Length: 344
Image 1 (tube, rainbow, N blue to C red):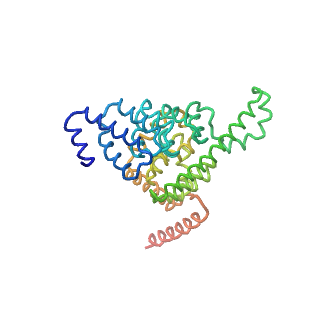
Image 2 (tube, one colour):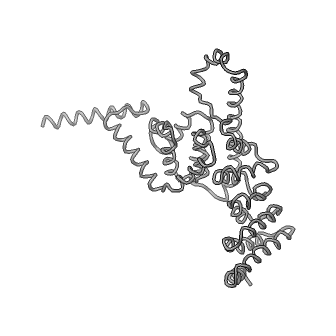
Image 3 (cartoon, one colour):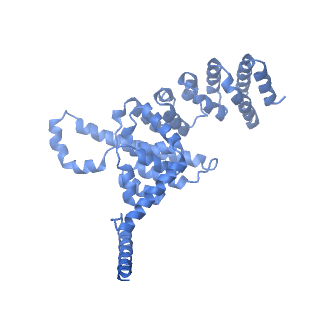
């Protein structure tokens, strides 16, 4: 009998049979020393359609069993990791089938409960540990403002006399820690991209990597330049998209590029770190991003480009000297045409 026959028997009879079949299939699989790809696929084909029909108790049992399994089926493990933490915890703590990229996405979707379980993993990537500490105590992770640092460089020494002892040193340590976190995150995400490049090619990978790298530098101008190139807009407009107090405009820009939600989140949190002080803020971002249709975002991008073109036609100051020269010559030609027409 095929796995579909087993599923039909389980569903047709009663939920108890689905429960027993679900547990028995996983138990039998875990007893295999080195399962083949075919056996892994068969287990996924059998258990995933039954998933919604089994109880929380059975899901918890299967999660615990698979957490100790060296060759656990990835699709079933990922499905279990999306469950509440009281079910997913064994997999979040021990499973080798969950990659670092998966862990970041899970933290983004489920927040602090999943993050606390992930923090108990042995050999946890230091960057993910930093992310979890940022969720636990968001005030400890602050992105340094380069302009503010430059403007206030001469004021640090006088100010330190009025503040508590060791406060400037603490601020400097926080800045170094933030930079180290960015460097490790760049390294980790680069490795993850190399591993998944052949399995799931992403047509906008070059664009995403440029946005990610420039966002993680902490230099706003670098990121704004990359954003202008990606969206085919001028630098001033790109700067205005990230100059707001919230990330609403940047959200539209990233959605128009069709970035996946975890990639869009990584870019956004690098540009707006203070906007994500707690898990609910991350959840809100993901909800807003999922509800934003790509067509609507692209329509908005077209309207921004139309505004840029309108400014150029009206002779408004553009972002760079080349555009300025072109717009001036266009204005001159346009005005001479108007004078000629008026004489007629």
